[in-house]
Amino acid sequence: MPEQHDPEAPAVGSWSQGDGSAMDLAWLADWRRRVGALYAEVRAMAASDPAIALAHWRAQRELLYREHPQSPVPPGSRATFEARHFGHDPSLRFEVALEPAPPPAPGAFALELPNSGSDNPSFSRVGRIAIPFAGGARSLSVFWMAGYAGGLFIPFRDATNGVETYGAGRYLVDSAKSADLGGDPATGTLIIDFNFAFQPSCAFDPRWACPLAPPENRLEIPIRAGERLDD
Image (cartoon, rainbow, N blue to C red; front, side, top):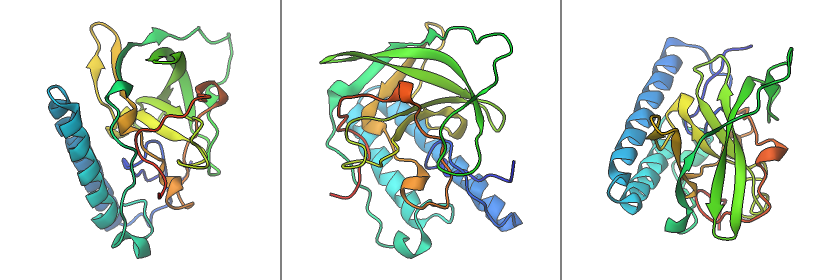
């Protein structure tokens, strides 16, 4: 697999060909440090006030997108970049149980999720979560990224895709790149907050290659929370 750069890096599980220079890699490392620190701050803030945590997340991500050399936004568009979001919906924050996935068939190959680029990183399906939406529960598969840094990965699609949000969906969790709102490993729960859903880097620039949500993670309802396209 060619050298891969990530945006959260801003968007979970996304890659681009960098120039491979020492400076390029130093900025990539800096991006990862900043994103990791941001999510640590968000988890701490959200324990007492999720709305303040969300406002901090939005402001700091927009700053990174606008100013950082590893931003997924094309350089010519960074100075005027403004992030777009749906309004905060407190009802779309959940702490859910991570249920085990069925065991793979003997000899089964690693799972490859749809991808916006030519690379197809492998994943394994490690569990399911049931989201208790007001209109009825829906389930999403939880994946583990093989190789690279590893980590939980939860992409999803919904009825806003292609109109209000990026057509190929958004991401909820990518713990390999620190995009993780936490949970309780002792009880096997994850915190899922759709207000923090973000668009993959390929939504900003096609040079990024992004794993996409498979059919099992496509919700037929609109999720009007998190990052969106321009108004």
